[in-house]
Image (cartoon, rainbow, N blue to C red; front, side, top):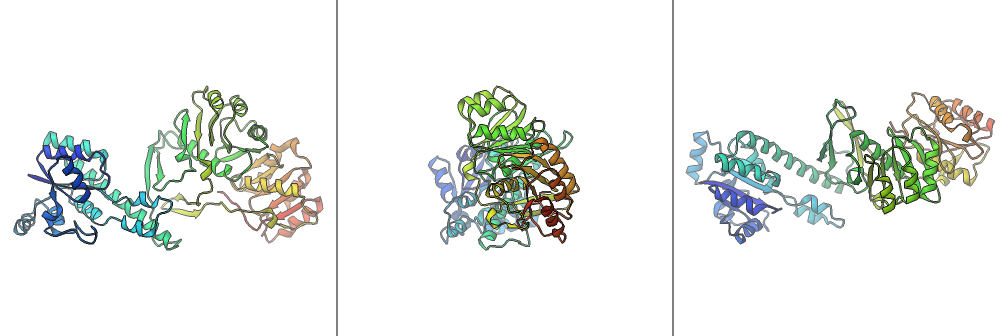
Length: 512
């Protein structure tokens, strides 16, 4: 008779799976709560103590760490000396292991979790059994995922055992399972110790979706989600309507969410190819939309729109007039949704904006042969802390407009320039190899909208006085920039020449 060892934390679909094993000639060894569930269901089991000849001790911390278990798992059936050892020591081979682990992830996801509770939910015996079975997959079937129950049972019913190919695949999954489990434990304890630069970086993600393709149709792509996901994320968004998001859609929507997070008043962000083409704010959402649209009526076509208020009918009717890829918001009024959903392919998403200030996560970017990791750029700034370096002093209204432009420029690719007033962006220049070209693009977009209210933000300092001179020649009245160039004085002198009020923040916001 073949033997299976079953010890699971999540007992979903357990009984029919184990009953199927019994029906196909397996005897069942089980532990603790798993054994109670099986016994209550009328499935005959053998207690783990009857196998180990030793009681569970230390509140269940030690029960399967025993040669009668691991000898039965690790013995190579094709080696006579291994089988002779089992016979000599009266160890029964174990042919199948069904184990899932203590709910460590679910425990640490609780808002008020205590360290002691987290520690008690670190499984030791379970991963040990999984690893032993997976190492010896030529002889042992390891099952860690309920999704594999039917496949395993079908093979056992049809041919008496699982195939070697299946066992190999299940073994690889088992090691991924324990690796991810240990990664979460390592992350949690590393954070508890306040260590920011561990010598080993342990990250784990769960496959959320196999994409149709990547940035281009010839590239394969996959979407993975952080094993400890956050609510304020495009991956956590609820899609109400439209086609599935593409690889590029997800990147654009992510950038739109990063940007809209900056603003508290009713605001609309139009994102195109991961750059803001228009940002508007107003007394209400409709007014904010009008201003975002006016910022760049050409580029917004086919854009991704993020709004930080529930979408109302008036705003929806205006958005419906143009082609948009995605609209993402805290929610949609019923009549607003009905209007937007008339278009078959537009994606309508909701995200929990109440979670936008959750603890910032680190972000990683792949490079050939490795990755870069950094904190997200979510620095909270106050324009009262800025330093005026020119003879002209900015008014309170100018400072508010400068703060609006400063928040916007954080989300344009460097070298980035934003020309704006207090209500909306007028022109955005980004991604150019030199700053003056970005400024020229922004000024060109702003065109005749530049007036006495117009301000400019630069994501990094001016290396020369040319940008400030160009700004002055085109009517810009106030400038915010980090400062810190060895030629700062050139820019200050140029600002004084044109009567520009210039403030420095001491902080730059490159976004490569």
